[in-house]
Each structure stands twice: as C-alpha cells, then as structure tokens.
Image 1 (cartoon, helix red, strand yellow):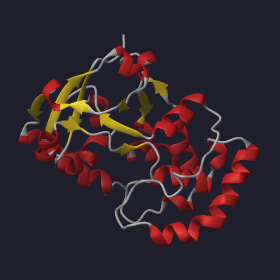
Image 2 (cartoon, helix red, strand yellow; image 1 turned 90 degrees about the horizontal axis):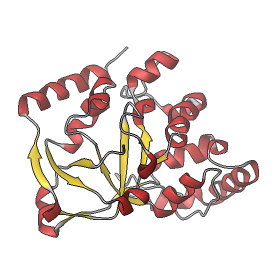
Image 3 (cartoon, rainbow, N blue to C red; image 1 turned 30 degrees about the horizontal axis):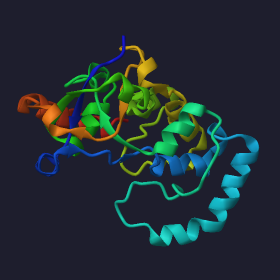
Length: 237
C-alpha cells in the first residue's frame, strides 16, 4: 500500500498562505545533479551520451559559472538536454519542479540516519499535512536519502561527508556511491510500498492548495533536540 498522507515543512508559511499554494519550487536538477555530471556521468548516462555531456560542460562551464548567482542551488546544466539510461530518471529530470515532502510528521528513518536533524534548521518547525490523488502519485517520485547520511558515509568510507570543509567532489568514488545510489533508487510513487526505503524523500507533482492542507507544528523541545543532534553529526569524527 502506497503512502497517502504527506507533510511539507517550511519557514515560509506566511508566503505560502498568502499565495494559497505550496508551490512546486524544488528542482530535480540541482548542484548535486551538476556534480554527478562532472564527476561520474556514466552513472546516469550511456557511454556516448556521457561523452557528449562532458564536451558540452567543457565548452560552456566557464560562462555558466560567471552567470550563476550565489545561493542558487538549481543546476548549472539544467538546459543541457540529455537521454538518461533510466526511463524514470528521464521523466523525473524532464519535469524538474516538485513539492518536497515526508510521509510522517517526524519520520523515524530520517531521524535515525541523522538527515532530519541536519535539515531541521533549514525547514523549521511548521508543516502542512495533505493527501494526494492516484493521478498525482502516478506523476510523483520517491528516492532513498539514506546514502546522503553522514552515518552511512562514515560506515562505508570512514569519512563524514557533512563535516564542514569536506570537499566531496575530490572523492569520485564517494560521489558515485552517495549520489549514484540515491538517483538510481528512484521509484514512481504509485508503485512505492510504504516502508520500502529507510529514508524516503517524496517528490510530489504539481502545486498543493493550502485549503486542502491541515497545518501543524513540531514540539519545540523535540525541535531543539534535533538541532543539538545536528551539531554532533556535523562534528562526527
């Protein structure tokens, strides 16, 4: 049975309520996507397409870098049209815009693997709870976020990939394992069975109307404990 209820956390609730929608402003193509194309494109692309991507990046990267604004996490190479090995990834990247959500107000797997504490300061305590139709589920996706966890990289490689100053692009093997496994884990939401992933990240198709949501807020004590755990995870040796 697929997940039917979702929670979208945000520090921008005033703006969301004013607009009347949770906007689909989360990009499938981000700087993580750029990193994989630069370091290990063969994870996502066939040999010929990977070569074409490398040539295009070499030719245009300097110009794009000069135009990119600070703090912009959208992909530098978002306008590069590519044919991916995976049909699901092709659909996922071609659509590009989604609403990010959890399937629980305090998702156990996200807490266990440290990902929720690491994101807590960015997403805040307030959330909107909503349900989606089967039609929307057919156009939405789920990816396994466990591979991003500092606990996973510490166990697998003996390094903390979230430690301040750690430059992951200098370690192609880690990029390939962390982000390669992440992207290749993709499932269509309509096919996803609840509990299939330990740290499921839900990419919901389209905007979500606020009037169809139920507002809520995480307990402040729980939130503060998550923030403390965040600092321990970032300093993990």
